[in-house]
Image (cartoon, rainbow, N blue to C red; front, side):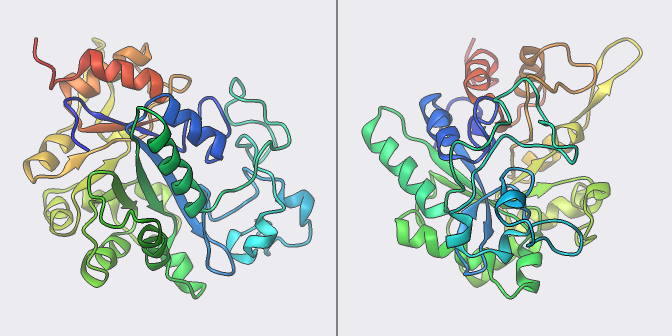
Length: 323
């Protein structure tokens, strides 16, 4: 998909308005004309790709109520321990923290779920249908969550995702599909073993977030790291605070050169996550945030919980728009 402005990726769907990764949230993201709609994917015990942000079920479903005795020793409920038939019995709800309260209390009520957990195939069918029945064509942006974890559990997550894309007719649609992962090995597997033609995005986290210690994200942001990424990927997905680090004593935004260095290597830059109800320190408004990233940093797209507002601001502030 080619646009004259940065692309807007609906982060977990229209997640500011409806519970994340539910089909209603994806349908709303399409209606709000997001360019791409994100799918985080994990596997069930019987190897079916489902759309869920975590390898755990407890933050966004009623699994603890339906299957109270199925937690592992750490107290968490893992999707990989449940068959698709069992997942079908769950209801998804607004994300809750460890205290049981909504992470974003002003969003959709964290009530008992109104819908279930979709499979990747079902979500692609929904978007396919909406692309056909409406005047808007949205792409998909698939993240493979915890490929190394799935491998330890005896499953091949990248291969399972590609199989769904092949079966649904999306495996060759370079203009409408991105595949992303925090794990370089998963992306290398897709490129070199599976020979995918789809564009690949290397997500970049903070080392402090990675409990597995499998990836040195600081190194990925170095010149050497970006050179390596450019060998197997088409872009990076950095945390927005890796591009903007706050304001100085005079209130001047402090920007890094990560986006510039990545783009010099031919890499797209799609930072995450833009939230009107969770602005970075020193940013006074959602509009200011977008102006900074679209005009000053000139990123190629953003992940947003508010795809409608981000789309409007991309039209307003796009560095690609002629005066």
